[in-house]
Length: 165
Image (cartoon, rainbow, N blue to C red):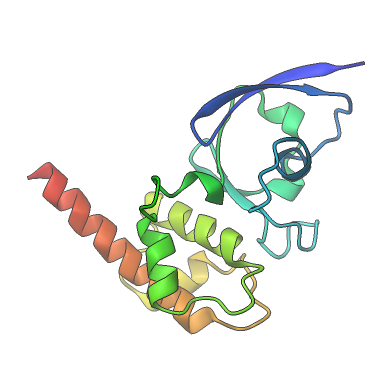
């Protein structure tokens, strides 16, 4: 039995046939849509490597069944940059050396984008660390990650003020 769902992935409407209702968003992204930026770390929702933004909220895609999100809007790390222009969070991660091996970086970046968009980043490092606590980094690049999130948040807030003026 084949089931059909509709998703908007990185701004592109997609109609996807599912042969198995147990397919997670993570597996759908990686195996069916060839979006390999979202990583499969623990596959249990404990590491955050698979973080994506689903209908404006950060989620661990390894825990989300694709069939449950028919009609949803999904953003992955591949959907952040605009051509050659990096998203402010991506640029800040590079500038603050917020990664080492890079495996967790896509999930860290998506979590940071979500944290900022949710208005939860603020300008307090402890608040950022708490908001990012679901994303683990085995290389312990947390200092750079926190600095990158604070920098990106400040840049995005300043850009928002300029647009409003």
